[in-house]
Image (cartoon, rainbow over all chains, first blue to last red; front, side, top):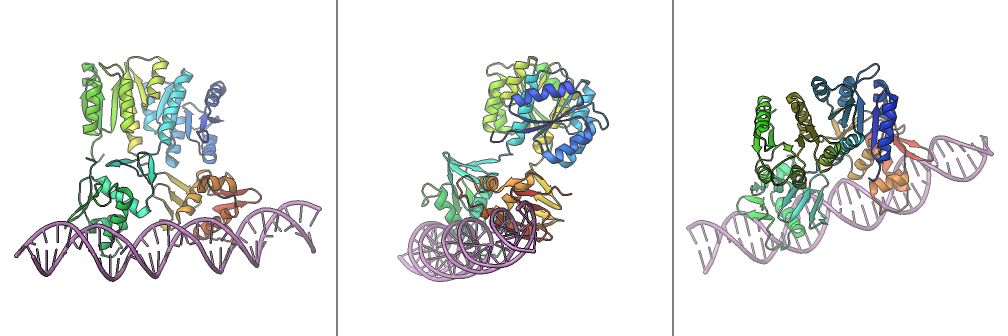
Length: 228
Length: 228
DNA sequence: TGTGGACATGACGACGTCCTCACGCATCCT
DNA sequence: AGGATGCGTGAGGACGTCGTCATGTCCACA
């Protein structure tokens, strides 16, 4: 981890809170503890933790309500921790927006494993990965790679490639591409598309004279080859 | 739901598989069942399900291995379902990339609630929304809005704002900002930060002379005000 | 209240990206 | 085969963004 994940522990049982704190700090997490709902929400706003570990039984506002309010302001992973193990309670907790539900007594190892799973998933940004031919397209990271090495593209070239790669084999007319990539507002000069297709090819094609990734469909437009 | 979520159930125990199928179909899910690892992976490639419910004990390839292979090709939510309840097993399952782990016997309601929680989270567009003052920051869409109208920022200005807004009230030194926003490689001239902070302010502050969103902390650096 | 350091602000130039245009080549139809 | 049309390719210029510098202003501290 470049910087350790912050975890907000909300539990009024001091023994549990301390134990959890020790365990999690031992695993390299940055732990902050609060004992009631109001201060939990306050701490949340100040700290922007990466995960909230929430006891169901709290003085004042209960855990369900805290969870609902957290959900209103953020998509932070919430792991509920409670002594109540009725199915109805579990269902209620999950319905309120919790991501996981663990009943006391619990094994510290399992707690840590479940926290890791939640943090892992929320830190892994919905990495939309497209592949076309031998290219890997990281849509969120705005990167295109061939065998691990990044190919630098301009924003426009990247958008053009993504548009084509999202529907392999489908042919896009120049008009469609202008609308989708450039936006509505643009002039109707479709030769603009040619130029950028060519620039794109000069960067991503192994043999730009015989393009295999972005293929011309004469009289219609362009399509991305599916990799075969 | 616009279209019902597809769930791939992998279990060689026909009684369980049938029961799970009935329960989930009753909740409106589209369920496909396979009985071993190889056909599960095959079905996965064909169907692109929205969630995989995976028994740990399978003929041939075990559930852990199936989970690993799924992870290699996709970020699909995986919920493990098994008779083994040792903490070590839970930890191993979660380490292998599972998102949740439920032990038999289980309550159908809890299964459904946990599935809903997973699907809900994976369907929620990872729209990371930050707000700072009266600004709304759409991190994925690279857009900043005030009362609905977008404020045009350059990529650099946007990254700078996001960096500050991710930790409201926390003060960032110029060195930190240079490292985080500009990347490692950069010169040590911290005045560069001043210039871009000023440009950012001229666009996002209502009264650039008295900035309230990006605030100077004399002798230290800058911080984003939390909106109060 | 004066002084030095820290910060704000404006100007300018380098650079990259994008759009337009001109021309050459390939492909299709008769 | 020859013309017409569609496409590829290179050059050049407009524009926006970013880095640097010079100067002006604010603030803390004595």
